[in-house]
Image (cartoon, rainbow, N blue to C red; front, side):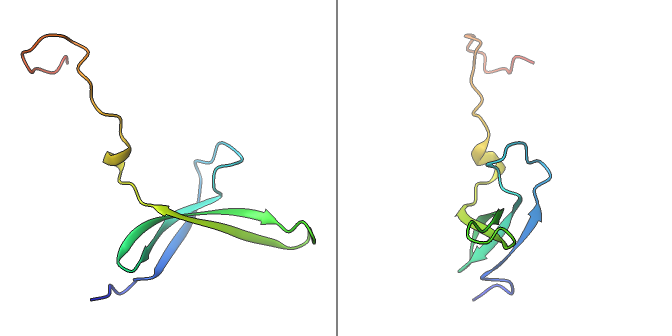
Length: 84
């Protein structure tokens, strides 16, 4: 069964942009029931500098826990306790 907003998405202004190559807009899109990452960059047409457009990219959506660094045990004791 299709979700009410399947094959649609949303973009928000990227207020954390620090580098020129980072997207101007970020958000997500649901395509055929799968949540994907959506990014957009403001561009100017080379042939006509008065014309602007939005270039977009769709990629796999990673949850925050998928992108976090794994916890490593730097302490060599075997008691299973965390060092804090």
